[in-house]
Length: 265
Image (tube, rainbow, N blue to C red):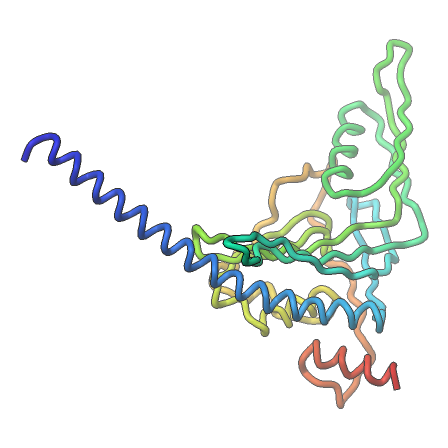
């Protein structure tokens, strides 16, 4: 076989491989769209119910082991979707659920060096926390210390997006229970109503099995935010349980519908 024939064969194999990969990508893309479409409808129903019923969900967020935003109420739920238009057809690529935890007491944190001030500022920025900073400088203009006043408000997001190249769906939670982001990876067929039920329970502070579902369930906190000085593992925040109701449906969506109906009646 000549060199030219060999190169032609290699090019043909590569072309077929690329065509096969493209077809698989398109298949996963459409499967992800169908899953996200169902998820969006369920989360939209959940959000409407939560905004009407307004269940009490109390959150605590540690900035440092000795500094905590406490007694924050979770409220103001919203859901949106990012779509991609192909041949005049809209396909779901991402579903985003947002809420926020708000309190009444601001938190004061003092740092006594330029490095510690910088680390704390970066930490607060990376977690989308609002704050005021008063810097104290030396005669030469160097920062000697700083006083942070952190607003008692923490934005929370849950992002559900597809990865067609791998055939995965990723659920990323930010500032849910703890500051920072956690990512969970699932096979497409693992993202179903039971999984979203457990995610909804996690959202409103109820006991759930969310973290143990899915074969890729090895959640690792991402390194997008710097750790505050002398930070230690944060204890799990306390959760608020609803009053017992022996007649309540097992489904979280069914429970909310039942509560909503009683509230309307």
